[in-house]
Length: 219
Image (cartoon, rainbow, N blue to C red; front, side):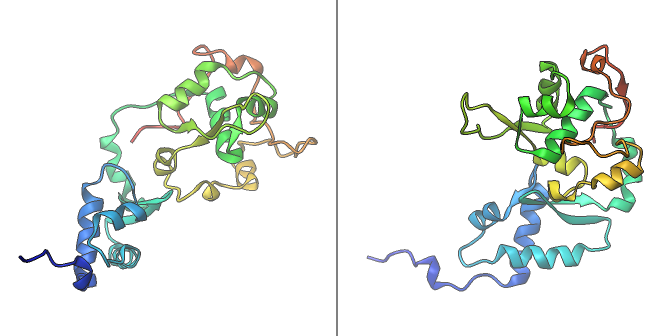
């Protein structure tokens, strides 16, 4: 009676073949694929990290590049060629100023509770604001705080990072850059909280009647 050979007895495929495997997986994936997922799908003994590194070098400077998105990797159009994709825009999303501010607070302060968002903004957060951001899959629920009431926290998603071409939330522009762009008041706050965005008033939380801005578009 013969037994099936142990796959551990066979050497891993050559690195060139491992690169082809990673390339195939990433091209077919609808979302960024993590290193753990790559390792689980490839034969035993493969080195997906090295294959990804080699692929990133191979695609550097081409029309399609391999980018890190959060904890995963995905092929994306080269940033300098994004103007060629403008005809692919299907729908423009209009976010109220309240939603823009709430999204910015979550991105810079995550994980953050609703009460903390309200403290930073200085006004109550309309329930529809968070619902809209969650529906767009730019914000998701995080872990509950181990404090009385165990309030839920909110964090940005990989979809948010992917949309803006960020590897992680650490790549968000700094406060000095935002002030230079006129999006933040130049005077720092006295309470240590994030400075409010210019031009906000409490009425901006009334949706959908609040002012809308064409700052975000779906790809």
